[in-house]
Image (tube, rainbow, N blue to C red; front, side, top):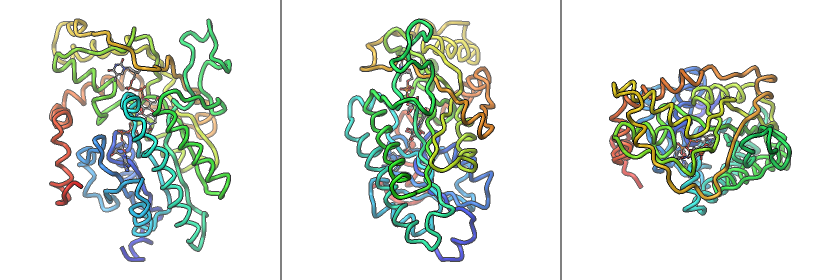
Amino acid sequence: MGEKEKKEYSKRILLTGGAGFIGSHLVRRLVNRYPGYQIVCFDALTYAGNLENLRDIEEAPNYTFVKGDICNFDEVKRAFADYGITDVIHLAAESHVDRSIKDPFSFAKTNVLGTLTLLQAAKEFWEASPEGYSGKLFYHVSTDEVYGSLALDPTAEKAPYGADTFAETTPYSPHSPYSASKASSDHFVRAYHDTYGMPTVITNCSNNYGPYQFPEKLIPLIINNILNRSPLPIYGKGENVRDWLYVEDHASAIDKVFHEGKPGETYNIGGENEWKNIDLVRELIRITDRLLGRKDGESESLLTYVTDRKGHDLRYAIDSAKIRRELGWAPATSTEEGLEKTVKWYLANKEWLERVTSGEYREYYQQYYGKDED
Ligand code: NAD
Ligand code: DAU
């Protein structure tokens, strides 16, 4: 790419993990809302990466896909140089807690070393540019799981540090290999800010749900299993609590923080929308049965209590007062609306679900880009 093309865009954003669940919503939002920005989706296309998620915008002039691994310093450096990257929005990660329990090493590699590789490439590239760090931003998209677990009933028994919700000041206390790796990557991001003066920002978000989520995660897994009349696995007693946020509201929060957040700061993002797993699954049964024209509660018989997740965090709940107060962000989607839209999307996109569960989606890169998978 020549100098002229680089200068056409006011920002050239390396968006890592853009072919994944949240990344694809964010890519779509930024490509459509900001024609003056170039969005470079940098993704290794692991099992969780699916370019079919981005089909509707793949021809947009300000969208570019680069297949690359954040752990590969040469590939990352090349992307910075080829596109004159001005900003990074970093989502690429191994994201599934159950997989981290079985294979912690791949989480340390991608989430910790991959983040460090990106930070170092950004540092070298930006420090060598005439304007240095001015006008640059490294944004890390992180999770509320770094804060550990809250008590189920905050009035009866406080968490060790006496909090009922996670605030930005809550001490880190990760439990799973996934959350330990995300906590570590957050620390590296802060270290690059504090040591080298890199402009960085971190957001820690609660559980997302919505279209294009890989059906290993609770909500799409349950919808898919109801559809196929397969067992609905509930870990333990189903008493664990998660704070759910519609994915487009997460994308709008990232957009807000990217443009208005203060470098060096952390913002918590959440729906303030807590559900016990069993109650959420029952709600999904109610909605899905209705939309499928089944008898009310027909799929309740599929509920299956299974062995609990090892080290299963009891409760997450986000205090999002800071981003609401300082940046004026708030979720736009009610749970009722979000769950209804989500179930409708999966039912209307059975082919997407089938291609993901059969593995056919992995052929799309080769078909569209005419290159072999490596
Ligand atoms: P996802 O698993 O759906 O997508 C991850 C993406 O990263 C995939 O496209 C994958 O191909 C890519 N990737 C993985 N390893 C890579 C590597 N080495 N190099 C380049 N790309 C690689 O994840 P998600 O649920 O969309 O989450 C995105 C980010 O948001 C993650 O960092 C996650 O920790 C964070 N987060 C997720 C949630 C949630 O509820 N899903 C909540 C808060 C924060
Ligand atoms: O809190 C943010 C995090 O939310 C993100 O950082 C992670 O990337 C994301 O995967 C998610 O983690 P969880 O472990 O909370 O999500 P998951 O969908 O795997 O599980 C949600 C809850 O449902 C959790 O308490 C475990 C339970 N569960 C999950 C599955 C897959 C079940 O009971 N049965 C299941 O089959």
